[in-house]
Amino acid sequence: MAILEIKDLHVRIEDKEILKGVTLTINTNEIHAIMGPNGTGKSTLAAAIMGHPKYEVTSGSILLDGEDVLAMEVDERARAGLFLAMQYPSEITGVTNADFLRSGVNARREEGDEISLMKFIREMDSKMEVLEMEEDMATRYLNEGFSGGEKKRNEILQLMMLKPKFAVLDEIDSGLDIDALKIVSKGINQMRGEGFGCLIITHYQRLLDYITPDHVHIIMQGKIVKTGGPELAKKLEEQGYDWIKEELGIED
Ligand code: ADP
Ligand code: MG
Ligand code: MG
Image (tube, rainbow, N blue to C red; front, side, top):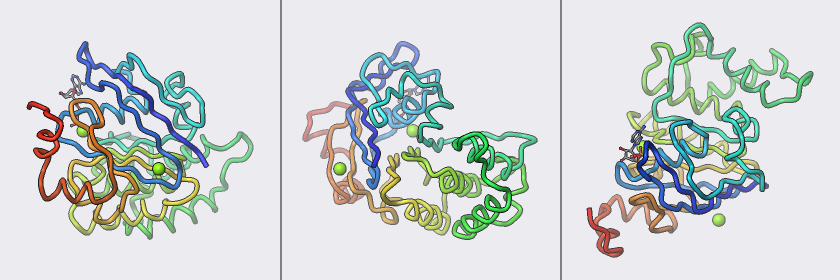
């Protein structure tokens, strides 16, 4: 079992405080969803966990099994077992998707214990099948000319191959049609279990019809203002965010 603890996290971007004390604990074998209106700091939380240089943590802590994540470089965070799927994955020209994946897998293994090419290909093929990906997706350059849906599936392929302890998935559902959404959800559901915990950030409830979260958190104005089970996401879908604002006396 592993544990990711975010404690009273304050994050600033260019002199503006965006996160104002976020506290959240995720264990492996748990899926947490974070929902909230636009501009409330959801992506900022994801970026701070992964160490995006533009986001300055002014106080609070992030611990992975007691280790100080904030003291780690970005690549160290990945090696420690964190995975971030970004809202806008970037292109890398000249590197095939399969090569990129294999170097990612090997970067997490000890030197001299690299995965064999055969084993890698077998595993990649089986996961690509789950995700209903075209075969040529392996030999194409990373993200170059990938459609929105292909990029998202490919991120889930990375997730399934890298097998992180914790994944932060920021709007993995944006721009997906319903079939792609189901396939992406299938991949994430396959990851569920003992060694894997997940933070799903989403603006809409739709994704959570396919991936039932254990815990749902609502973030507003830089703070988690409410936590519940899957029913909380359903209520948001039906009633929007106004009732929470009223309940908490938040002004727009
Ligand atoms: P969400 O993901 O919940 O929609 P974000 O975390 O992206 O919200 O943004 C929170 C706030 O921070 C917004 O007011 C946004 O305008 C601001 N912000 C985000 N990124 C930057 C940036 N790179 N520079 C300046 N302001 C930013
Ligand atoms: Mg719990
Ligand atoms: Mg966002």
